[in-house]
Each structure stands twice: as structure tokens, then as C-alpha cells.
Image (tube, rainbow, N blue to C red):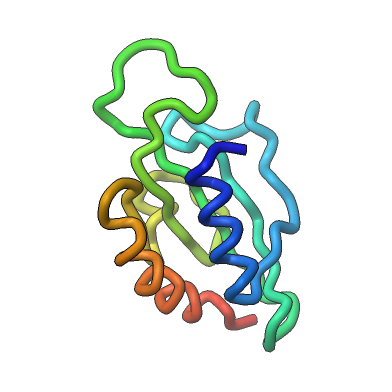
Length: 114
């Protein structure tokens, strides 16, 4: 697991989410490096959300897994486009990550509805 993914997972676990599954990489489009299906372990228990690690749209050429990932988005439903993947919120990796993660977690609370 890449460092950014590890950080996101740690924050999600602290906020009452667990990774239910990771979507098969063979069925996701170029814009998603990885998609996680999450389940809430807090009330309401079992609420579902999706986290998508987003690939830089300006990246050119072949890409290895984990390369050119600019940030993470969250959504209530399985995302079929980059905009759907960020329909609840998005967070860029980099200098603003630590400041932005709290807002990202707050925005994710809206997904904790069954």
C-alpha cells in the first residue's frame, strides 16, 4: 500500500469506516487508480461509501499502479466518472493534505446515511 493510501485508511478507520472491499483493478477506468468500497462501523452501522484514488488527467503515457495519483474523492454510489468519484468531496495529496483531511472527513459524514 502506498503512503497516501495508508494515511487515508488510517483517517477513515479513526472516523468509523472500514474497507469492505477493493474493486478489481481490471474493471476500473484510467482515471481511477483504486476504488475502495467502505462500510460504516458507526451508526448507522452498514452505511456504504466509496473512496477513489484519482489519476492526474494530464498524465501522459503508460502508468504504473500508484503513479500520478493526485488525490482522493468520495461518493455515495460506485463512481462511473471522475466527477461522480468526487461528488461528495475531494482532497489533493501534497502540502494541503493535513489541513484538508478534517474537512474531507466532515464531508464524508453526509455519506453515513443508509
